[in-house]
Amino acid sequence: MGREVRRVPLNFDWPQNKVWEGFLTPDRLHEDRCPDCTRGYTAAAEWLQVLASRMDMLGSDIADQKRGRPLHPWLAQDSYPPNDAQYQVVRPSEDILDLLAGLTGQDKGHLLNPLRGGDGYRIARKIVEAAGLDPKAWGVCHACKGHGSIEKYEGQRAEAEAWEPTDPPEGEGWQLWETVSEGSPISPVFDSADGLAGWMSDPAQGDRWVPQDVAAKFIDDGWAPSFVGTPATGLVSGVEWVGNPTTEQ
Ligand SMILES: [Zn+2]
Image (cartoon, rainbow, N blue to C red; front, side):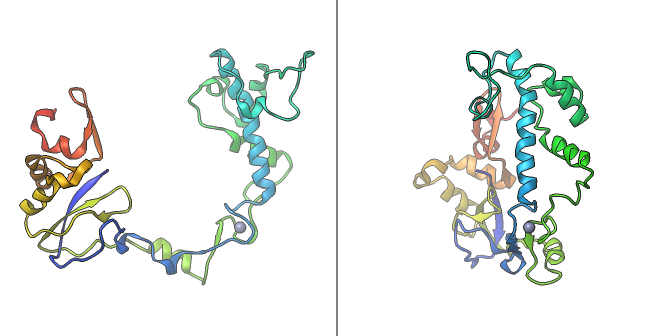
């Protein structure tokens, strides 16, 4: 877990483990759900995307065959797949790459790269174009114009885009925060760095416990990433790494 030290007022009383309200977009800026879609597309466009990504998987299977890997279960378990004379599913032949290279505009080498991302969206787009339709218009939900949500009042979206988070107030106190969520306090507020270090190195912290000198150095440095890998130690918690001179590189 990423942790950081914040200086907050001594009487700061935001609950622990609750994201600071200033970090969260206020409810009044949340738009209504679109009644007609979930992601801004019509259901027809969603289906086209599914079929296009299955076509894309046929290309990926050529690479899988070369690496001795089985046919992807979504293809292997298709209800009406192409069969051989023994009614076994036949895997796609390499000429699928010519078709997909033409549809996606990618070269065949790219299609054989096992680490490539899916190109289904390029295939879908090409099919829409081949139908003589505008890919920016066809398949876009009319009700929300592709946003997937609808403004509660005019200007709400612009307001949400202009919204900026606000930090908690600053003060004389010392407090530990986690930074994995938007950010919430995870310790009481202490009136000194030593107080916070003492709390962090209290055995009652269980999994989060760190030695006193480690905690003190962490507070001094102000911030530690969640986990840090070093050749000497492997993966250690960020707090431990920042605070421990013997593991520094
Ligand atoms: Zn919609």
